[in-house]
Image (cartoon, rainbow, N blue to C red; front, side):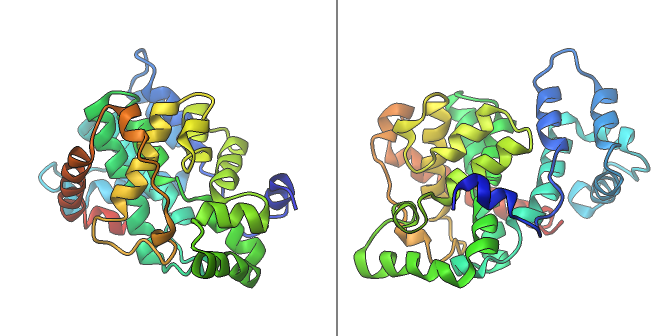
Length: 280
């Protein structure tokens, strides 16, 4: 089975988060205003309702009641609204259990958000890409697992056999058994949904950043973020120990393991602060 055949055969995926790549484009446009953001989000009534509801939550307490989307955008700003939209849209894809990977919904969601926060922190530190782009890459990095779970189910046990009996890394075991890995599947899904290359390429090459044809620094950031997020204290799944760190990315990013540990501590604190928001 090819990746294309796998994706074309999917039947039970949630609706594609098509508003996100369009919002990212607006965020990168210096001439865009709040009206542009509002008009895009308004195309999705369910998303609009959830953003207004979340804007009135205790997490954003002190701003007064928000009654409309335009008011929420003006009060909280483009980037916070994008972060909120990203979390809401992503929850359908990276917030559910994937028994194939032996991951419960809570641990999968925690790991996805943790990776997004680490990516955002590194982007502000290193300056290789926009924080909103980095956050999106981190949040969606494991989206391909849902597709593989739906198609392969119990057949995936052969991958875990290689992990447990042969000591293979996850992506190498998937390549040997399936002919592709979940990173490639996730990237193909995002490409189909209209996400730009600066999101797709880092996700596709997250396990082999030196192979990325472009966006190599962002890809390296994702590779390191994956590793850091696994040590934050959540439950990244039984496949997490099979992650194979490419230490050469530290040179690519001009950082060392000490700085990575500092980012881990920062991100752990951020997760505590955002605990209520993560329940959206």
